[in-house]
Image (cartoon, rainbow, N blue to C red; front, side, top):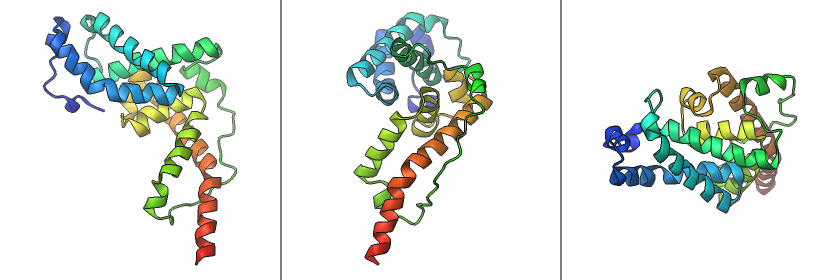
Amino acid sequence: MSEKVLPELSLDALKSGDRDEFARLVDAYSGPIYRLAMKMLGDGQDAEDVLQNTFLNAFKHIRSFEGRSTLATWLYRIAANEALMMIRKQRPETTLTDTSLEDDEGEDYSPVQFVDWCCLPEDELLSSEARSRLDRAIQRLPERLRIVFILRDLEGLSIQETSQALDLSQTAVKTCLLRARLNLREQLSSYYGERLQDRSKQK
């Protein structure tokens, strides 16, 4: 996401405390922030809490925003931190740092099964059942992989924007993204493999 979503938004007005301008900010970014929180936490009430806290923090700290990243990236960073704080309350061992990523570099993220589903028709790839399977697979990703995948592949942030939002190096973001994609591909290989077998039987 980039500032072109709402190009007329005035940072000066936001910093001066213009409530109408802040209301427009909330209106522009509520959807993406809620989606991020919902996919991170899987709970509607928790996602609402993250949404509310994100904008409360943004309103409180907007005057200190220096513009080193886009306003959207800054909001994503606040939301990601809020979501991770909730996760840490349940699982204190959860971390999201370059060091924590280096610690498990030895883990094997190569798919055990790898099904090529390029031959499936688009309606099957985009069916409600397929989307539901993908959503469940995303929820099963480790937090550090899930949040990178959501920001980069679902919300469309660049590698640089994702690294800024999560305070990670671009190398760490690329590593997480690769691992997340391989993990998801393996999770979905069984499902799409069955679809391909069904289509072969019908021929």
